[in-house]
Length: 286
Image (cartoon, rainbow, N blue to C red):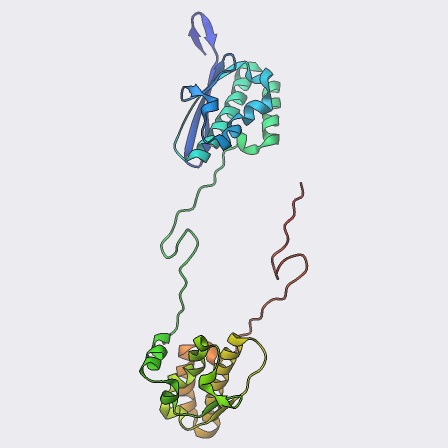
């Protein structure tokens, strides 16, 4: 307390914080005036969040707030952070003033009212935005990559040089039709991958007849390429020799393991209570 004109000046100073915004509230005996950086409180911007600053005063009412004057300063952060720092500084300042100069019962009553409405009026929020890190677009997101020994560019380069039929020189028919009629066109190169990887010398010794059913376009394409790869490996194992079979299998496995090993993943079926397998319809218990 300070002496001013022969009277005791009762005052307390409190801080409010939100992210990087810091607000300082000087609460002293007065007539209920509240000013921010020397200006009336109703000039706070943005307008849509102005009611947030008034919340502690509206909750406590005129009888408790009319006994004090509040002087506010704020810096740092953005608009929203400053608003939340101000409301916290006001609430903590009034509680501290009542604790120091009125009585403990009044202070407890005020604190309970504020805590029941919003705990962040009294307790600072310690959360901070996690900084971005290298290797991704944000704090946790990572750039995706595929680790394969042989790039798909090799296959595309071969296709630019010659057509698939000229490269393979092997009769491959799907449901009685030439393989180059496979649809969709954009995925046709996937069916030719095993043949292009192994080359003319290994594929020209065999003819391949294919049948496919079930699934969609993409599923059928990947099933066909696996059938071609596994068929050639099985033929070399049974009728040629183990060394040639191992060489072919190593080439295919180094490029893409799914050419030999089936993918066991399946789409999880939709369940009641939500739009998909895991999503649930949201509900409020208020």
